[in-house]
Length: 321
Image (cartoon, rainbow, N blue to C red; front, side, top):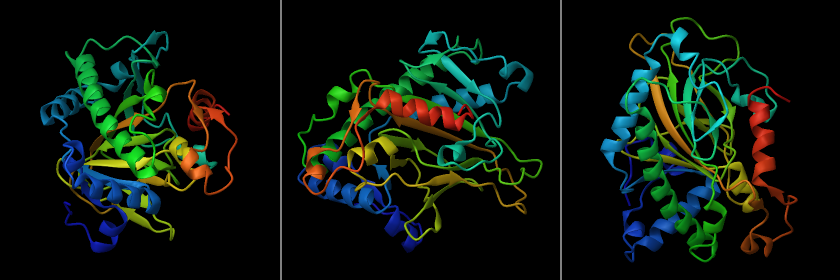
């Protein structure tokens, strides 16, 4: 099992797990599953290496998205604002979204901008520049689907379900790929404004490609302490979403997290770019307590379709409730 150079207290809470033995069908794969289950019960966060994601696909999307974000603001705000095209692109300008609102916390809009895509999600025509942006999103999306499939199988083994138990829920999945730009903060943020406000993710799980920079991902542990997520070259951060926590009857955790502002005294570059892939089931999928968890105690939640659940969460984040 691979470990990182993060401090021991952080490492204990947010472990780094080499999933290659599980992906390759080796006997050591059982230890991988046990490590994943332990992380999901303690914090709902872990990092994976040995995932097989093509580095060149990641680099291409990262660079092309950065080229888009470097375009003039007056041009960017005219891109990706419509919703008539399934599988189109959506652009969210700076401070357009306030994630803390999903937890009932009122704050200024988050200090970030983003490009968003999902094959079954509404969007607009793709911008004419940079060339190749649409294909870069599609290629990376496919890589994430493969990795997500491996992780779903690991989750099934950990829970005691058939390896393909979740697959029907993802036949027409509503997954979303987002590239987020956290610009340099040349002025002090507004009171209560963060790069991304405290929130939990809505769906099944999130697969995040992040980078080391001042003002990064922080995870709240059970003691209420904010931990800086370790950064390991080539690793992906995995976290459980709200829908999956409901499926597990709250035994697996969807943990609050945020993206902090860079330290005020820091003099170097603080620009940051991350690429989260939000794995979501189909709109018709019913989220209800899974049998192995129901056998241990009464379900805490009434069944709800994922479509109804995500509509509520999205409305909260964009101030429409």
